[in-house]
Length: 309
Image (cartoon, rainbow, N blue to C red; front, side, top):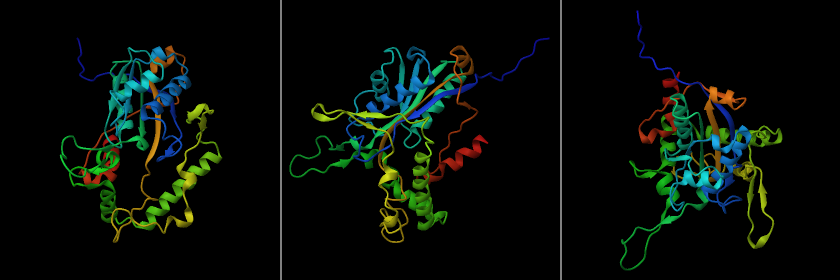
C-alpha cells in the first residue's frame, strides 16, 4: 500500500568560510573605498578561504543599506570586481540593520530547497561615502537645503519622523536601562575587542584591505578595526547625550558608530561540501524573521529568537 507524506525533505546547509574586512571609522582609513570595492575584497577572500574555484559560486546575496551613488546593482558590482563569472546571479538586499543576515538567510533557503548548491552571502557598507541629497526641482530661487543620506535613508524612523537614536532612548526608558548600564556595556565591548586583537582571536576571519595612495605612493595595508583604538575611556562617561538633552542616556560612545566595512560567507549544501572536499566551519540549523513596532526595533531580536526556539 502506497504512503504519502507532505513533509518536504530539505538539504543540509553548511558554512565553508566566513571573512570580514577590518571595520574602518567614519571618514577613516577606508573612506577612499566604496562599499562595492570593500565588498569585492570580502567576496574574493571568502572564496579563497573556502578553497573552491570561483566558478562554483553560482549565486550571491549581499546586504547594503545606503546604496545612493553606488551605481546600478551594488551586489553585482562587488562580484564583478572580485573576478567572478559574469553569469553569476546577484541580488542586493536592504533590510536595514539586518541586511547582511537576511542575505545569509536567503542563501540558506536557496540551498535547502536545491535552487543552488553553493551560494555566497554577506554585507557591505561605506557610510563615509554616502552623499548628501538635493531634491530635484524644488528650489527655483534662493538657498537650497541638503539632506544627509546617512540620516535620511539609514538612521531615521520614517513612521515617527525622528532619529533611530530616539527609538533607543524609548527602549531604554521602557526597560529601565540606565546610562551607566549602557556605558558599562559599551566600554566592556571595546575592551573585549582590544583583548581579542591581542589574543589574535580574529585571525581566521579578518582579511586585510589594500588602500591605494594618490601620487603613486605604495598602498597602505589596513589590518585592524579602528574604533576600539580611538575610544577615550576617561571621557566616556562624561559624553553628552545626543538625542535627548534632558534625561537622555544614549551618547556617541554607547551608541552604534558610523563605520565602513564588508563581510562574506560561502554557504553550500553538505553534499557540495563532500564533492568539493571542503571541511565546514559551521552548520545552519535554523533561522527566524520577526518584526515589531518600528519604535521598538532594538528588541526585534528578542521577538525572533523565541520563534526559532
